[in-house]
Length: 287
Image (cartoon, rainbow, N blue to C red; front, top):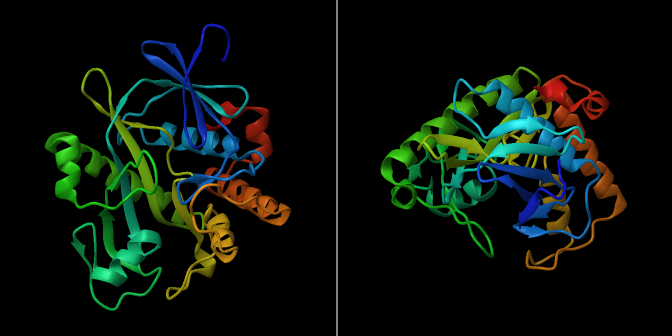
């Protein structure tokens, strides 16, 4: 799909973006991994294929909830042809459990993004109901949680309302699907944008180990950090290594690379019920 007719237009933390024409982009997912908004120097083999395959799997199964940008899937397992969107200027985060920055905010204030929560909750506690907790998109440095009034001011009231309701619906669908396969979807982040006709559309990636916290349900025990199928494994190593979370990031040791790849592949196989080797042989099997 990448040839002399395509033009490289941007590099993200993980993806390379190419223009096919005025209405279509090619997104190529690399094996780069970022933690704390910093791209680390060590790639995770096949990570880009896991992200692409899982995203396509969810895109194909949530069209009745919200339209998405996927137009086609490449034979390399890491390439998607997508509609161009004008992306909303917020991260659309949904939380069903108390973890990460949400846990830190709760400890400090008893609330997350304006959602006042019951007192006495522990780390990894299940919330009474999923909550939508928007965050800024930082051009440099770290994203920051904001309240819904600030998010609506950035997006416009109606577009914000649609994005919030779509995100909550996607979370409810995906968390039920994951729970039936022994996985807890603790929280997840969506990117939504506006199509030329004004429709709010799901873009970027969806419900992958890069954008979600996936926990094995059989080992769930609130009160502490949970084992995970996502890049929390790398975050934990980085924190133990004493990194200050500022560029440049540390090189990852071989065992962390292998362990991260294994977790990503296991998440793919358990959520899709498709072998990863089967996906590599025929990426369109996820559609």
